[in-house]
Length: 306
Image (tube, rainbow, N blue to C red; front, side, top):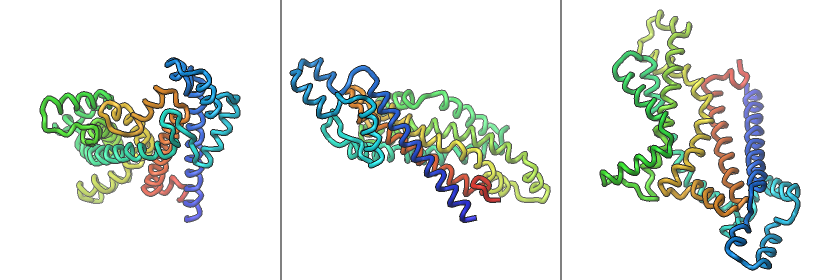
């Protein structure tokens, strides 16, 4: 049993490392193939050609693309993401500093989404015909139809209109709500359907016949069984926190990877763009690892244990 669990864990870790490496290298190639480079802004601003030539030589832009890709790949393997042309600093510390802020925002949004979505989904799935369940479903569908960027702008407008709501660049409330509420709505819909399916399963129907109390049946047996399909998409949800946070951070002024990515794209800083994508790959990979671990804990069959 322990051996199977160890093999399962090692396979998932290997898959996560491959994902991180592939997305970061792909981002570097695509950014390098895009029009312009780190010296385009200097050229448009009339900087002396000799200075631009020195900068191109220092950044290795005169080398063939295949050589640049090989050097960058070797650097990623050594956790060296190169030098940012815009900030004249190593990319790693920049991404780590801003990534910590994005992780903080993502954790709070994910905590909010889980705390709201899972219990509400169990409730609406077990009592689908009550007026509360119908209201929750309407709110969930509305939140699902609202992108995080639109939610952030709407919440900012509400904060300015009402007053007294923390809406500064360092305040977490609005970006957390903008990110967390759509995710909570998605989790509620998934959990609701999974709960209905679990309650109709033969083993739970048999538990009803044995006289297990309804509350225990719903909140213990059905909840545990219905978590399996929900946890299957939890890694994607965690990855969605990163992608959604980019727009939310830019709209609310939160100093995370969103603003850093925007600055990198604007200046054509290829290595910084690839570094931000590397952080996104790490986020998605860690999310998938967490989701796989939770699924294996809820359902041992996932890791091949009978």
